[in-house]
Image (cartoon, rainbow, N blue to C red):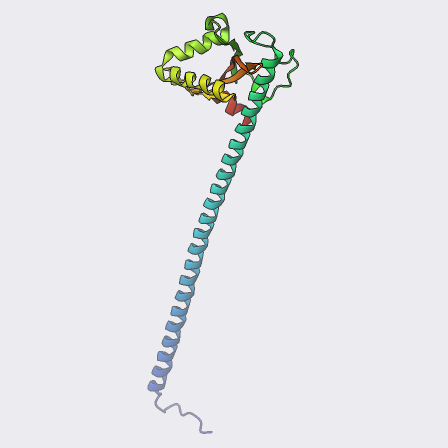
Length: 215
């Protein structure tokens, strides 16, 4: 092999070709790196969007399940209250008796009848009796007198309970006070040997009822 002479001219063309090749490979590597970074960014964005969608769907499923539970719980507790009032009505010899002591009367009351503030008034009103003769009758007459819409709604409640022979609800009331907006009435019809004998009425606070059965 012939040794390189220090006086021999350098091959600049070869150096130029080597430099151009290095630049080309560097550019390709840069483009590959940019492509990978772009794919990574797209993957991260897609993952974030998927997680957000998944969380939103999970939240919606939880809300739906909560609403279904709330509806079932409300149905259960209000039906139990209807049963409790029917028991009270039948155990009370005088239907006009007001403020029956539930525990003393031996009634194993449900949550709504036990919870303070839910049942504001309750008692029986015989058919054809003077409404002013009992506290529950006076409260019922007062609520009917405040607004014509309330008078109509509570009148329909009585008719439905009597004609269909089942408990019926009236309200919420449309009275001027904010407290009235959460008040409803429940009428349990009473029958003696098949003949209508009156109503057992309860004045209820919806707000307190919801507080009672929602954990």
